[in-house]
Image (cartoon, rainbow, N blue to C red; front, side, top):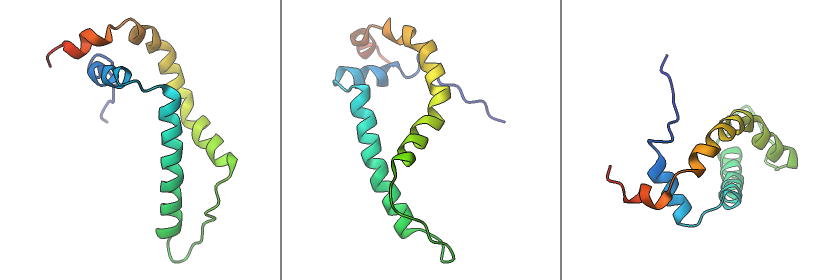
Length: 98
């Protein structure tokens, strides 16, 4: 079994680039939901098996479930890592050489 590890030190340049470009959490979430609606519509209407039929309508519960179910573990990780990320000087991280 391969162990997955998210290491902030390895991704600090990517995080710095996103922050320096001016992206905020709410903008990223909104773009993700809009892209998700289009992807959902594409998958449900064009890829169902011949012997099944899916309801292509989007309900508010779809958004709630898709946001809440996978949010538990990342929320815990975010609470732990927030302090470390906030203490990083983003401009110095972008100047560093890989």
